[in-house]
Image 1 (cartoon, one colour):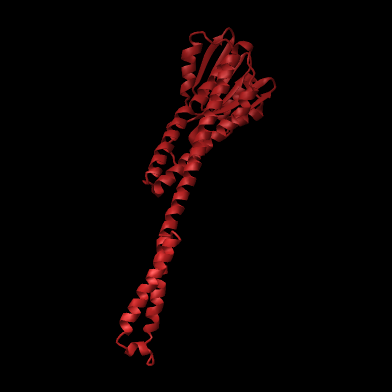
Image 2 (spheres, one colour):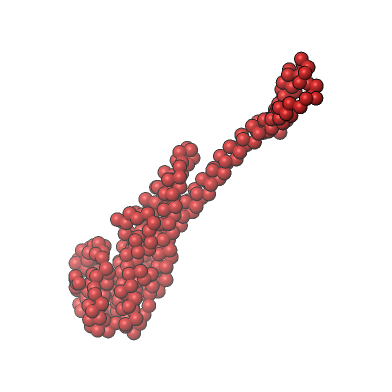
Length: 299
C-alpha cells in the first residue's frame, strides 16, 4: 500500500493512499475513526459520486476520466476511476486504486509552495483537476463528430462510421452521467469565504464539462437521425426507379402474356398486320404511361 503523507500547514496532514487492502483500510479507519459504512463505499470500485457527512467526517467520492482508455464498448469503470476523500479541518485522507497524476501536481503547485491552508482548499483543487480530465475527451469526441458529419454531407458514409458514432454516443453518455452525478457533491461542499472564488471556478468548470458532453450527445443524435433520413431517401429513390420500371413493363407483359397463349382461334395471329399492330399497341401504351408520369412529375 503506497502511502504518502504531506503537511498542509501547522498540524493539518494529507494522507494519500493507493490501492489499500481491506486490512489496511481497517487500520486506517481505526486511526481516523471512520464509519464502517463509508469505508465499505470507499472500497467499491464501481461506486458513483456521492457526498455524505458521517460522525463529523466529510466523505466524498468523485470520478475522473481515464485518457488512455481505448475500449469501444466501455463502461463507467472503463472510462473513469474513483477517488474517495475523507476530510475534516484536521486531516485529509484520499484513497484510490490507481495512481492519480493530478494529486502529485496539486502537491507540487500548491502544498509544497505553501499556497494551501485548509483541507477544504485541497478538496476544491482535487475537484477542479478531476473535472479538467473530462475536457480533452470532450474536445476529441466533438472533433470526431465533425469529421463524420463532413463525410455524411459529402456522401462518404458506410456502416463502420455509423458504428463509430454509436461508440461516441456511448462514451459521451457515460461521461455526461458521471458529471450529472457529481452535481450533488459539488453543491454540498462548504468552503470558507476566502475559498469561495475557487469553488465557483469548480462550479463553472462542471457546467462547462456538462455542456460540452451534452452538445456532443445532441450532435451525435442529430447526425444519426440525419443518416437514417438519408438512408430512407436513398431507399425511396431505389423503390421509385423499380416502380417506374414495373409500371412500364407490367402492361407490356400483360399483352405479351395474352398473345403467348397461342389459342387456335386468335384472328390476329393469322393476319399480316397482327405483329406490327401489337408492336404499335405496345408503343402507344408506353407513350401514355410516360406522358402520365411526366404530368405527375414523377420523372
